[in-house]
Length: 291
Image (cartoon, rainbow, N blue to C red; front, side, top):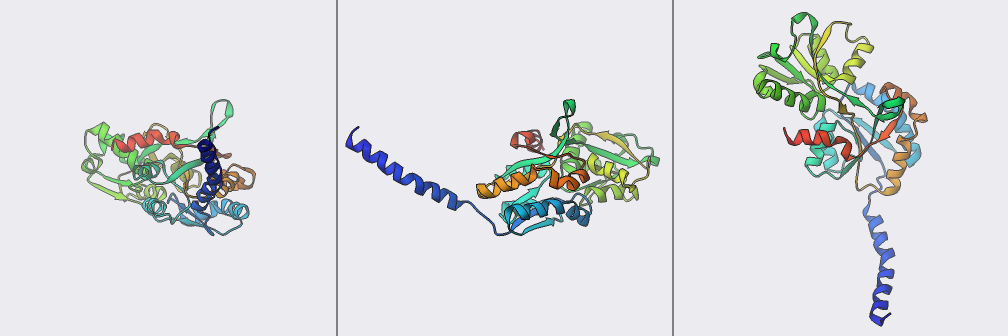
C-alpha cells in the first residue's frame, strides 16, 4: 500500500465517527410529540378513541403527547409542512397532496382488514353516494342541478373520488353538474345534512356510514346508497422524516403491539395496525395527479 493510500484511509476512518455524529445531531427529538387527526366524526369521540394510543406513546417515549382533532384536513397538511406536527392520521388524498408538495413525511401504519384465509391485511373502504330513500333518486343521472354535500376538499371518499366519478360518468365537472355544493367538514355532518334534507345527496365513506347505522344515527332504510367506488386503501398514519430513529422505533413498537390498543382498534373495526409504505397509496397519488 502506498503512503498516500494509507493517509486517505486513515483520514476516512477518523472522519466516519464524526460524520455519523453529525447525522444523528441533525435529527429531531421533540420534547412533546404532537399528533393531529383529520376530522372524521365528533371531536370528543375521536379524542376518546385515541386515548389508549396517547397513553402508550407517553409511556414509551417518556414525554408528553398532545393529540389534536383538527378542524380541517388542510390544517393537518399545513401542520406537517411547517413541522408543527410530528405524527398524523391522514386520508389517502391528503397524503397525495402532501407528496405533491414534496413533504418530508412517510406513511407507516393503518387499520387491518380481513384478507384471504383470515389474514390481517391493509383495510379498504369505499366512497358512496347517499340520498334519502323517499326521494325517488336512483343514481347520478337523477341528481343534475340538485344540491350536494361533500366532506372536505382534501377528503378521498368525500371529494377526490367523487369528482373523478362525476366527470367520467356525466362529462361535466362536479361543480357544473350540481346546482349547489357545500362542504360539511366531516363525514358525520355530511350524512346528517342528507338525512335532514339540507341537501339532496352526499358523498361519504362507507366506514362512517356503517358506523352511523350501527349507532342508530340513521334509521334502517332511511338513506339509500345509489353508487359506490372501487376499494380505497385505508387512512395512513404518517411521521415526519426528520424525527430521530430512536423516536420512530419506539412509535412503531407502540403501534404494532395490539394488546394495549385493543379498545381503540375495536372502535375502528380492526384487529391490529399493519405496516404500509408509499406504494400502498400510489393508486390515490395517480388519481390525484389526473384531477
